[in-house]
Amino acid sequence: MSNTHSSPGLWALAWRRLRADRLAMLALGVVGAFLLMLVLSSTGLIVADWEDEVGVSYAPPTFTGAGEAAVRASGAKAGPQPATEVNVLDPLAEDIRQLRAELGANPDVALDMYGVADPLAADVAQLRAGLAGTRQAGLAEKRATLPFGADKWGHDVLKKTVKGAETSIVVGLVAALLAVLLGTLFGAFAGYYGGRIDDFFTWFYSIFTAIPSILMILTVAAVLQQKGLLTIVLILGLTGWTGPYRLMRAEYIKHKAREYVMAADAIGASHWRKMFSHIFPNVSHVALVQMSILVVGFIKAEVILSFLGFGVPVGMVSWGSILNEAQNELILGKWWQLTAAAVAMAVLVTAFSLFTDALRDALDPKVK
Image (cartoon, rainbow, N blue to C red; front, side, top):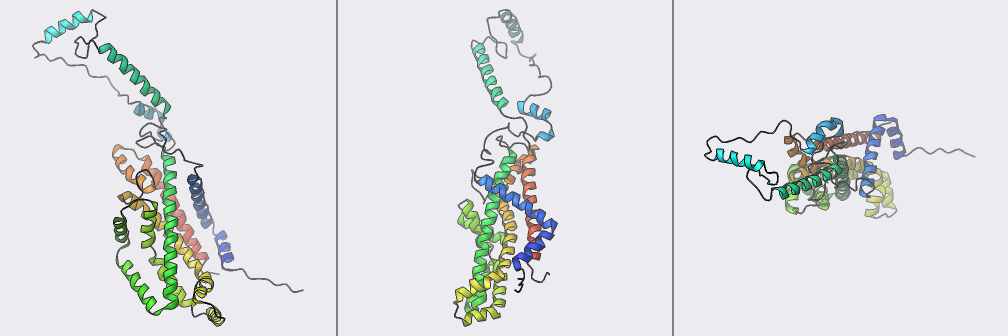
């Protein structure tokens, strides 16, 4: 009875290297937490009520102090109210003063703000009291402070940021998948067949790379015009395939001359089978690393598009639309919405970047 030991494959070795890197595992945990939050948000298990007006307008964060927030929410004005000035040059001032004295002695006669008898003053005062009571009751139902504050309409900034993360992450993932799919497909045909097909795709690639990426993105956004998640995904996916194409083309040129591809050709395997059943599994790690890199870039690109007004439509929220809205609030000293979106985006982008670097090192066959 002989003992046979199989050597670990590429993915097993990569996972072993990842587990040895504590920073990579921490970054993976942060990314996993954001993805879990994305699933819970998209299914409505959390932040389904993010549009509810749970706080007063611009309710500050709770940790800034509730005393100032209560005064700000109630709209109370500090200091004594200025008294009504009497115009000494008014020729009727003495007569009005005498009339006020006479009418003031009669409690059944209501006076307006100028001291003149007003038959509707009592009714108006009663109506004002009723409206004030209704407003105070409505304000009593809304909170003066929230954990991370509220926006202009009283929406919870924390829930709004989580909902915005759903949009930004979905756009980043789907657009990166589309870009890698196009780049892999184009690179496989160009690298495997060569000749005129390679010349055509190289010419097509040169056109896209000759134009700065941000200008290309804005150009496609201006042509499509219609706003929506699908539009943003198409904008980013159709302009971001050049990086994966360049790498996959080089990999296919290198692998098509390997012995295992020649053996597949000897047994009569079709070109499609050799490209995607034999070569692609050996270069799939390149596509995976490129996708993780593009997710970070596309999340930032979506934020830029939404900030400039080419992103999500009215009624949807993303980190870009939050930043666009928050820029006007800074003038009023309302910093919490900008801070919440910026911190959330910075944490996700940093964690994803660290994980991407670790994944690239773990999948590098030169690393033992």
